[in-house]
Amino acid sequence: MSGLRTIDPKPFLARLPRGPQSVVGDRPELQWLKIAKLRIDPRYQREIGRRGADNIVAIVPQFKWAKFTPVVVAPIGEGLFAIIDGQHRTTAAAARGFESVPCVIIQVDHEDQADAFVAINANVTAMSPLQLHAARLASGSKAAAELAEACGEAGVSICRYPVPANKMQPGDTLAVAMLQSALAKYGREVLIAALSCITKTRRGNPGMIRKAIVQALCTVIEAERSWLADRARLIFAMQTFDFAAQFTAASARSIETGQAISTGLVEAIAAHLDEKITVPPAPAAAAPAKPSKSPAAPTNVRRGEISISRDEIIFNGQRLRVVPRAALLVAALAKAKPNCVGDEWLIPKVWTARPPNAVELLEQLIRDLDGLKKLGLEIRSHRGIGRQLVEVEA
Image (cartoon, rainbow, N blue to C red; front, side, top):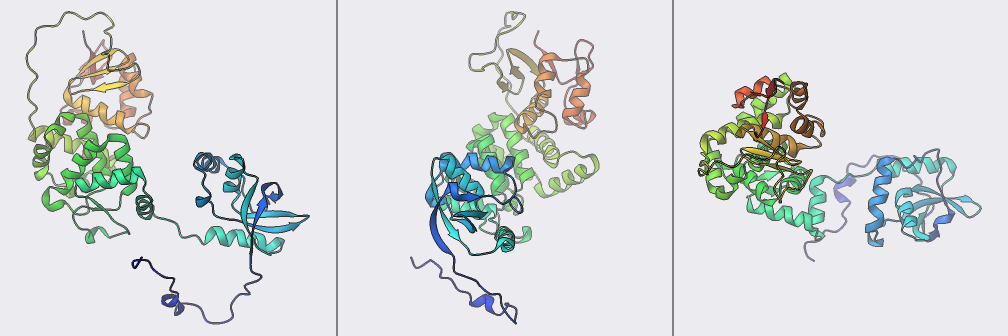
């Protein structure tokens, strides 16, 4: 208990303005009020929009009185009260089936109600993602604990407060929301490997645990999961990769071409690892029998799911042969959904239908189609359509 702080206003007294101060008014009362007696004043209260509705839907199944702050209300006559702050949580309580909620009753007239609404909603100290993560960790959140464990294994420390990039130590990061998202999307193994490529190379690369860099590393490693089998080899291969220089170069290209920074980094990291890590060739096998016209998908790939390997993509029962770098590109696009550079429906459309405007569709997925040649991609022709990344297995 010795680590707990007391309320101490002394550091702020010298900053208080001199002169007359406001009249504090009557002390508020605390009461449980019937929800049926509460009203919404449209003069200053907004309608419950989409975001508010989402909040209510999220609150109801997890409702706890320990998380419910009292509703601020003001009497308006006839035993009714206007809600000044708390219409969303009151609606959630009603949806959960409660008839009453705890309220703070303030004695203000009709005009001062709107003024109180502005003051309560404007003078709010927003919680930063860093503070929220620390609070969730202290509360025993499983997701926060899993992220802290993964970061600890990779030598990453999530800062408790904002730190300038030039003051960061190796492993320090502010990008907690991005890390949580990456853990959910790519999984623990991929995230640890990606972070280790930063923290365990070039003296820890301080200040380089950034959203674009981590996303690019995760995308590349996810596309070539064989590299996870020997993490030490992967880290050794990244020792000569200059994250700072590559991030600067990708940022400059982003300004010139509109290409996402992470996309440029995916290209640079993939090219570097392709050069440094030699993937052993697959053992020779007897020539397979000619498959049926519509080869069935393997039993471990359900219809609608995507299976991406170095040499082929399986999607909706179709097996597509690809060159390795094409698989990497497709994996990057698939993992980026729905926030990739193209629309979600375009990827399966190009894979399965191979329409006459395939090149146009691909150009919508990636801004610089001609630039693929620089990445070592083989641009093939299929059925006279033109440039393609994939061809159907014969």
